[in-house]
Image 1 (cartoon, rainbow, N blue to C red):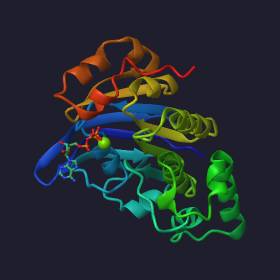
Image 2: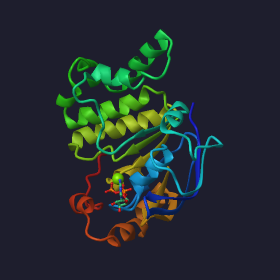
Image 3: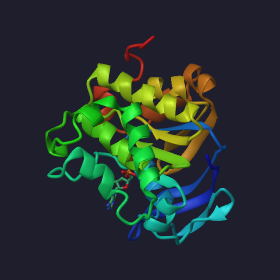
Length: 256
Ligand SMILES: Nc1ncnc2c1ncn2[C@@H]1O[C@H](COP(=O)(O)OP(=O)(O)OP(=O)(O)O)[C@@H](O)[C@H]1O
Ligand SMILES: [Mg+2]
């Protein structure tokens, strides 16, 4: 059900501007890996390269051993690698249910299978079942984030990449989103989590990678990184940053 991912020496950018300068990372099957780093270091760029939205200039990406370099985004989704982008891209004028269904338009599913996927998503996020007839645009921020994750889940991901799922959400809703991530992982989905709430991400991840200026400056067991200096260096080493300023990593509330 889950899948592994191995990225080697990946370079990617926009036009002539290089962003990723040789990124390597490994996600074991069923693992939960956090990717952290200050603003503009290339976290979202990495996810875009992995999901085929951006073509790497060099390097390799192996998803369960098969190369993804050059594959188009739809083919990558079909293989079970799903990307929940930063900023919740939803069809705001469509209902919650239509948003979930629209994600499946290109996929031929047996009727029973579609129903089973709805049921799974509604079990994880009951509020989406309650609000399934409501337009996505009037959902709260937290509900929109749940819907964005749910859209990806409709594709039965073997590996799920989440880009800053907590961004802009109230603390109680952040708890729900993190609970859902833990639940998905427990069900066997491999997860790559990009998060600005570093402390929270490290609490649930097995392994973490720290990205700075398009390079991995360190990685290791998440609990070790929590207690080390590397992360602090990565954030303090960066220039003044909007998110770090608004979410200092050492003043975050411990949820337990
Ligand atoms: N579409 C684009 N065209 C040109 N440059 C871009 C584009 N998207 C991002 N960049 C640049 O690439 C660099 C990396 O951006 P990216 O969005 O990957 O960073 P990030 O680590 O996700 O940051 P954040 O924490 O703010 O989300 C930045 O310098 C950014 O300005
Ligand atoms: Mg980003």
